[in-house]
Image 1: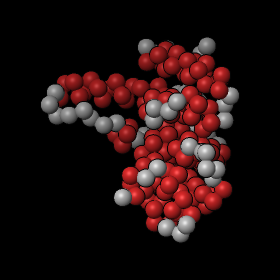
Image 2: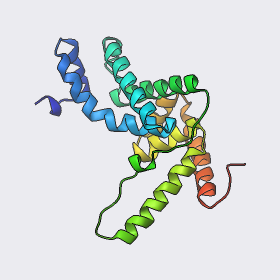
Image 3: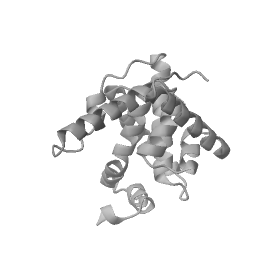
Image 4: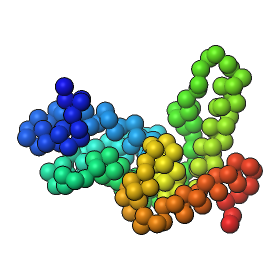
Length: 185
């Protein structure tokens, strides 16, 4: 079954002409890419466009993909760059209006707890909105996509030693914003 193959094995099949197997890679990485794009772009339509563009670019670049490359990191880097392209076109940040599209309710078992959880998540997304796109990208990669520091460094083109310090600053800013402060240092 193709779904049980490694990314590298699937890429090899695609390069041998079994192009329909690209759908397996799409299903594996679509959600992580969308979370990253939405976290950076703050708009559902733009995030969907960035992910679509990233998959097209990744598909076209597969023949040049090195065999030792981690597809997940490589693809998220492409996604990140597609997001930057959209930001350059937009040239300004807009408020995030799609909270209900990204926040999942826990359950209907405890409506009060669900409300508290939702309010906390909305506050967190509003605080994330106040970070710059690089900080948001790093936070989304680390805490939503569970990326390693090495994967974050590769995706954002940061030196490895920079990841921990920038994530720490972003967490401090988020904590301050969640407590009612500002991002001023």
